[in-house]
Length: 381
Image 1 (cartoon, rainbow, N blue to C red):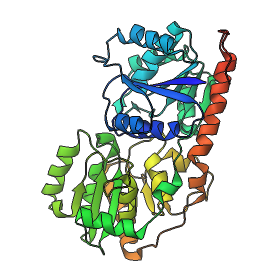
Image 2 (cartoon, helix red, strand yellow; image 1 turned 60 degrees about the vertical axis):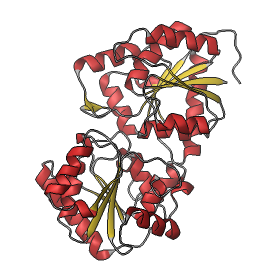
Image 3 (spheres, rainbow, N blue to C red; image 1 turned 90 degrees about the vertical axis):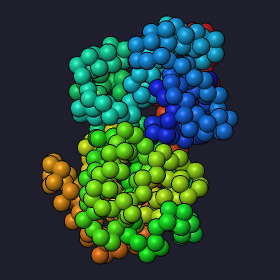
């Protein structure tokens, strides 16, 4: 089988990193097309031996992307097209239909009121639903997202839940890596370090995390990620007088260096996710694999599991207001600064989200899509 993955962009986001990891484990020949922004993940994919092409789409309304993508699908002789993220799903499913190739779409970032960090509008949803029917299947990364798709009106028979996955071994705690990363960050070896990972956008509510750390004189903060809130967060930390205890690192990859996420997790003592809503919560699972206690808001990766699968997690968010949430988070972190918990063994949730399991489940979806597609005369191993 030969598959083409179409994604909106390849900056260092969760969906983009998940695609790269998935391609390492899928027993399928795969190429990648990015509609725009061939960023650091494109470089990583090429280093893995994956062919990556940039369609150089000129804005959201560049309708020439559809025939260009359809020609690329035809000429490549692909058996299947797999789309990722909103714009790629809309344009990619239409192009796949024109090319006569079955399509599968993964819905990575669908919230109750946002999609990929932007407000959901009636037009956004209508366009999504109109093009969704052109595909053979839609993959939800969590039961929560599957429920949202059903609420939208996507037929339940077309929805397949395949959770995001991680390579747990990559995040295993290493005390030598911890020392090296703290030295690179200029963080004292005995400091209590709170961390977060994610795009710096308002919906992640990292300002709440900055405020909570400011209220804890012995705590330091390390944030990995970039986005439009980077400047405002720096200014906010300066106004609170905590610039010396805050490290805003910008875009960080998954490599082994001191600024790779595995090393940063080793350097932390607690992980926090303050997102208003999540479709999955991949960074939380990575933190659990590193043995960290986790304080989190809405997180389907944890919330959708049976009780007891993620010990070491503390759920916050009973207070919706910024001040109430800050007090709740500050209290949870203050308790951790006093108790100083040791590294925990990775909980059952980590095994549940193994990338090998996710790849097998996705192959089942591919088989379903190919079996339900009109015959083209090809055989599909």
